[in-house]
Amino acid sequence: MVVNHTSGKEFSEAQPHDSEFRRIIRVFLKRWVSGLGLLIILATIIIAIFAPWLAPYNPYEIDMPNALLQPSGEHILGTDFLGRDSLSRMIYGARTALLVGLMATAIAASIGITMGLVSGYFGGIVYMLVMRFVDTLMAFPLILLSLVLAVLLGGGLHNVMIAVGIGLSVTYARVMCGIVLSVRENDYVLAAKASGASNLRIMLRHILLNCFPPMIVLVTINMGGAIMIEASLSYLGVGIAPPGAAWGSMVTDGYRYLLTNPTLALTPGLAIMVVVFAFNMAGDGLRDALDPRLRGLL
Amino acid sequence: MIGYIVRRTIQAVTVLILVTLVVFLAMRMLPGDPLTIYIVQHDIDKITPEFQAQLMHKFGLDKSLPMQYLDWMSGLFRADFGRSIQYNESVTTLMAERLPVTLYLGLLSFAIASVLGMLAGLLAAIRRGRMLDTIVTSLANLGICTPSFWLGILMIYGIGLKLGWLPIQGYTSPFDNFWLSIRQSVMPVFILSAWGIAFVARQARSSMLEVTRQDYIRTAWSKGLRERVVVMRHMLKNGLIPVVAVMGVRFSHTIGGMVVIENVFNIPGMGRLMVAAVFGQDYQVVQAGILIMAIGVVLTNLVVDISYGWIDPRVRYD
Picture (tube, helix red, strand yellow):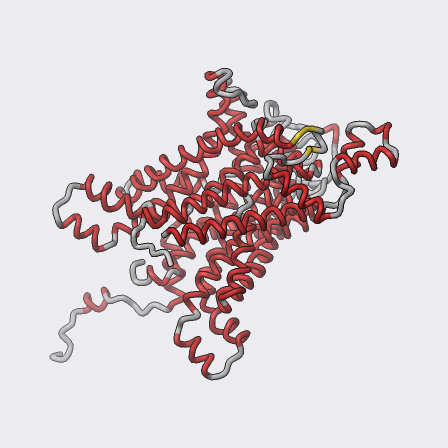
């Protein structure tokens, strides 16, 4: 019993070994709003996938005798001006919102990351050209750019996705280019070059992978942004063709009956807000968890 | 410094020329034909090939694309933005009527958001972890994800229709009827600034917190300076640099917000004109409107970039 004088108490206070993955989860969940955001995102995904089973009525079925019913046990959020159940349309609206958010973000990320990667890696004239293009798109207010592009492409949900995707891509290009400029100065890039790796291989294996954490954060936050723009566009009248359900156009449709049936216009807006909030908060949590400068502090 | 300003200005002008090209080509690629829309809306009985040709000639649409572009560009230097097909009026006149409305409401919200946002962010940062911080942070987090059109409708419902305190739509110049103008502007300006306040507050708070950790702040405290001096002289100046850097983004977002809000509140500004013009494929109006907005954004970015060195002496121009 001479060997070990350290008391058990000190042992228990020592930091347990923390794997990187567990550390990220721990920091992420430390802020409860990030966890709440993740929970809301998961719930929305489930609602969107299982919409046909969750919706109490057919969201497209017109039932004129039952138009503009007040919220009741039968129609929890009432019915719209064509007698369609508002709750069912809200549930199907989650599909539209998530689909557009996901597709627009995917388009934005693939275009933007490619532009940023190429311009940051090669520099010089390529950098100049790409950045002037980015500056040009950034000179337009995003909502107006998406509106013009969506109408230009002929309206409809697909074109809204593409339009919003192009509009958001410049952010990725900017951020990515900035990161690439600093990452490419690392010794391991030089080592890869010295060992004869091709430009493409260096860009994909050594640079792109190291830019992953900030991109994940950007993607999460952009999902919220894309959903918000889709909502604004469908409020202004571009987007899913009738009778399809989108939260933004539900607000527009319900606005005419604001005095008598306020739930029609107000609940879809609340849904947009909650979902965008969820993506923003999850993004903030991820940023804290993935930021190497905060490692050890949190 | 001068060299940097010159280079930066050339860059801004290049971007603006690219903007004119992109806008011009984009509008020409629109499916459909603005003249058909015009004829259907105005003189449906006169729809003959001769009349169409006559209109084509009147609006200069019978020329080749490069010639149309040159026509438009040369017009710009004479402040002649062409002729609106829908309104059958000079675009310059249309813009002159609507631009002041948008500028007035937009700049007012921009200023309010800058001041209140910085203040809120600063207060939250120096009271980190307390009640005030929690309130500011939660409100800011909610503020950036509230759809402006929904907030508008919510306020129209609550404050306008139920309580009857404020008019729910329209715009009056403050020079015509000051009191009515203020009453009509309260809701749009509040909604437009709400996002800005939230955005600036978040930015200001996190950059202030970053600054609080710096050595020179510890030095300032240990010198025995009063809290007011530490905050105002050392923290505020350094903490606001990133807030100034995002002014261009905010400016562009404010204009974007105007596009939506003018439609919610029926305000006869640029935004509503633009949305109608996009749907009516009124080439000249969209071109002119986007160009004016882009000039605003590019100029803001130019001013921000140039003033950066003055705000942050560590920035070197080379």
